[in-house]
Image (cartoon, rainbow, N blue to C red; front, top):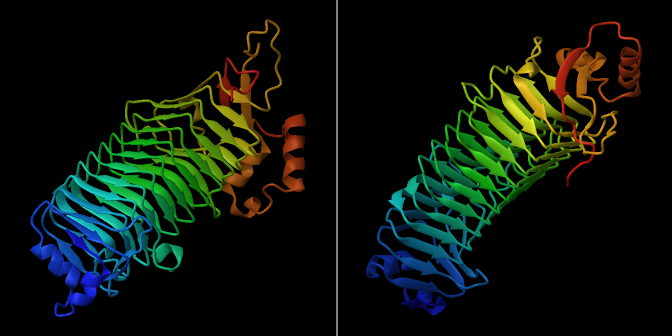
Length: 402
């Protein structure tokens, strides 16, 4: 069933020709939209395919209120559409595409602009969001809507999407989803999980956001082969875990952030979080800990070019709960007499005078200055207080295995 632009002009008797076409279309049929503008605020309540042109010149435009497209049926496909003009209500979750209580929905190769929220899934399963471009309304960062929102949504695939200048990509109470090959920039949280378990996050690129990936109150997650770089602002975080357990964090590149990795009470129960083969490079602070009570394992990671390697935000040093093995440390000063690639003496990292800036806001002003550098040098040369041991790696690597 084809509805080119001429259809729109021929259907002026109807208040919304596209909605009329949807209402009249047989279940399971295909509506093809040609170049032109179509009224939004449509509801799709039956299995349908709505497909525009490859150049996305079929423009479904909302009137600035509510969501532009609402899907209340399973087995719906939206493809090659330009969707814009949602409302601006955060309470109403005004979105370009709102989907609720369905499954088997495919949203592919759409362009979403001038919409508070991009795609909002509530209780949606076994669906796919693939190759969409999403940006929010031109508001300040904190009051933009989220690019992709999941709420109690499971077993979905989010692949190869580009989020630009939206707020967050966020998942609440959502499990067993796959996030892969996405690119997010100039937002707040590139990817944020709350009470979300057993999700896979792989091969994504997140840059110039406030936070790369943050996991909260979650367990059983895998994050691998992601690149997180140039996180912005004074917090500027690459990857963070709060009260999260049973994680595998591997083969990621975490580069040019204020904080590379931040662990807050993670793991929080009798379990282990594993960090291996990650490249943690050129961050202000490579790893920051807060309130550890269980074990984390760091193995075969590369620590290079970071201003600070390890710090703890607690007056009591909790880093003994962390186990380090076969990591590369660019400040290791040992030898490898037997040439097995492993240092002959353990690597040990201490906190000297630099620990002062962690607890004193006034001293933070001097962080990174020549004065603080001199203080650290003198403290290491002739310690005026007992330094704290932050990490011991009994088998440090002599070379970074890129």
